[in-house]
Amino acid sequence: MGVSGASGVTEQVAEILDKYPGGITLVDSIEFLVTWARANSIWPLIYGTACCAMEMMSTGSSRHDWARFGVEVARATPRQADLIVLAGTIVEKMGPNLVTLYEQMPAPKYVIAMGSCAISGGPFYYDSYSVIRGGDRLIPVDVYVPGCPPRPEALLYGIMELQKKIRKEGRRNPWKVGKVLDTPFFDAHSKAKREWTAQEKEKESAQLLARERFKAENPDYKPAKPQRLAKERFEPVTRAPFRKNGHDNAAVLTSVQRAFPAVTLFRQPDSTPDTVAGLGSEYILDLETGQEQYTDLVRFLKEDRELGIDLLLQVTAVDWQDHFDILVHLLSTRYGHKVFLRCPVPRERPEIHTISDIFKGAEWHEREVFDLFGIRFTDHPDMRRIFLQDDFPGYPLRKDFEDPERVIKRPY
Ligand code: SF4
Image (tube, rainbow, N blue to C red; front, side, top):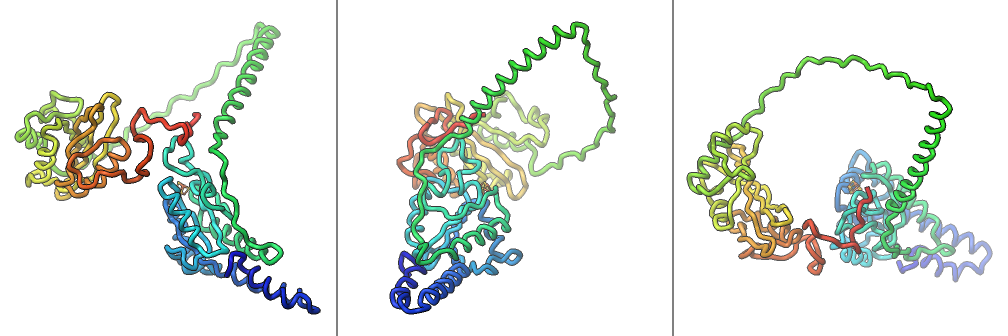
């Protein structure tokens, strides 16, 4: 079908039949049939990018079953698709791909923005450096389904609204490419807050005047004393002692300090295994080391059979403003204990050796730290940004990151 969809077919038929008696009614009937068929056989291109996608999947599965409305053949390809359901957050890096997908879909095509993120950026409207505030800034949206997330019934209702819209199309009301919102981000909440504060001030001064007037008119007035209820007493709750999991902290610290005497605890440099034992089993050992033995220590923690630490949970960083800390979270899947390992990195030269040769999984985590904090990992096999575009200005998780073009500050 051409760009004009159903109307394209009926236009050609109309050219032949319109001039005969009853021809217009016949063409109208054909048109009705075509739009009816099209509205009841919507094939979606799935674009589930965050939590809303769960609700979209639920809409497609047995309990709700969007196939009952003719929504079938949901696939991750624009081929033959005539609907995109934007289900989830859209970030800047996805933007060009989303536009390409939309352009690759044959016309006529439709878009449903499902959930607050796809409508306006949702919870990421403020303080976000990467989220696009609404799919309609990239492609034209036909139906908005509000919610965070909307339930499957809401999406089905959105689909039914779209079907109504499709059924109204025809040669007198042909499908055409919708509009894309090209207004700059408008911070409506800050404006509302300023107006609200002004109103509150006005109200307060009116109240002050009223209070003074009341005092002057009733000089002997004394407010009634509030009656307080006796505080209820409850039996103390007996809690089950925390179940010990894995090696105790004192034993782990003893093993580590035997091999690396310079290793200390974060913010407790004088701690010994005895004092660590006193911190209780809920405390997770938070080791601190210098760069010179960082990789050796990670290797030791992984290879020491007694400690049994075999899983890297995460590599992340903290910006302390005068320096960064690299934080490595480790777990023993065999015994169950966890260890944090941190290593300071100077702000002037944010660089540290990679541990991706020890834990393969560190490769992506380190790229994330590089992307968001700008800390470079030397000898890393692929030191590139991972989430943001290569030309993204700055490192958004640094405390001094500012980008007034992109980030709208939360006014409260
Ligand atoms: S609208 Fe809410 S539920 Fe949907 S993707 Fe955004 S945060 Fe998740």
